[in-house]
Length: 267
Length: 367
Image (cartoon, rainbow over all chains, first blue to last red):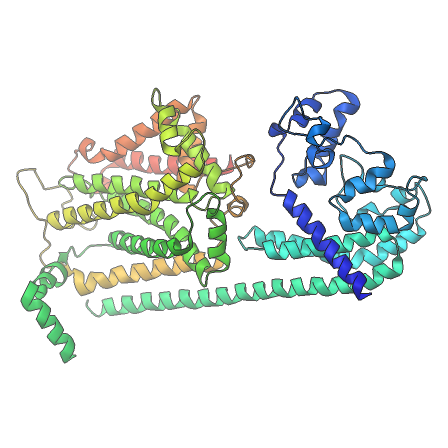
């Protein structure tokens, strides 16, 4: 079990590192030739651009070339295999295609009932997450409408219920970190840690094993608690600052009063 | 005590320190009807000194390099012991300096203290005002955040509206066609060396003028409120029977400084993010323009004026005309009357101008 936990930790961190390595390269529509050409094309050739613009990939600056390869700065050779262009993958290649970045998720998927049905009518990554308009991994993806396309929702409901509490904790912590960030606090380290924990948690979505989810969720909540403790320490630090500030203000007002009274003695 | 007295005696026999103190401190008499507005200058001196000290402390960790500036500011705010306090004091202090300077100018304006022979006081004060605006603008870029990057882009862009030399000036200011690493280098040099030296020198000149003419009597509570100086020769305005600067008015100055410090600490400790938007905590990204970048509160009226006119040039020309009028006010307004209530037309114009400035600022903020 410890080995499995270690492997999961490592894959979570590896995924985090891989994705963070891509994040500092902001993709802008202006500099990517794929978008320049495709967005004005009609039908299935132009549609991916519009879909991508609403995706979690676009939100994080992951553009066309990050998945499909090619040269996004050279229109003439943008789709040249010599420049690494891969095009669209076959259905059975989709997990490996996405798994270049989402390493841990791919392994869990392949080991799951879903993965075992790959190429035999089973779902791939895009079945649930969509292609181009890639949906952010969240519990909302596990719903009766989506799962009901292939099987009953019973088992998925149990899985969702088991993950609900931890997901709620992650979402709340993410919002709290964003709020701190908006106040100038350096949350980069904590964000990276939360990102790794979230990735580890999201890999559980894919092995569709309710018992394992329950067991792993407890460990993940322990890690979240550690991040939460650090946030609480930051809150306490802020409170201390305010107390010191109140002391400073009172001292200044007392000094002002003292100067005023001393001045009066010269009248 | 004996040691201190011996030390003072030692200095006194060499440079006549007691004579200087008697003339410039205890013997420096101020009008009896002096009011709290006369403390604004002392508060400004205190804030300027604080800005110099906090600025020097920030220099220890700040790195004026486009790749490192944002990280170094984040490091100061989060890792350096009391770095957050020093930086917030510097940020709040810069805003407070502009605010108190505006109050100082307003009091001089409404008490008509700029009238002859104090034209040079007003003129040096006005130049100090533009230098303070300059030091604020250049300092705004240094954190190299989205806010600073785009606010500087907008501010430097407007210079381009000047006919013929506009584009050249923009490139000169930026050190290139766009705001980039050379702009940071230029603004850093201006912010930490050239402009502070200019301010310090001009403050010296301003105080020298004050020392030569003596302090003006407030027009309030006086029967005779006309300006008596006829321009016939140099005259020091003394105030026989007045209150000594030291210790009496110095205590009033201290009281004002402590009250100002209490407000200042209130902002630093309880509203530290009042002067920041979310973009202030994102690193500069030349490829991503934020939706609503606004300048600092004291540039909002200028910002809105530029938007109101059909062309940027006209907006700049209107601002230039208003600033020139304000700078040359003592040379234009030659009326000897100093009491504001006896000058209704002047009061209407002055208050109208102030309300217009505030109105444009509010409009700019919500536009």
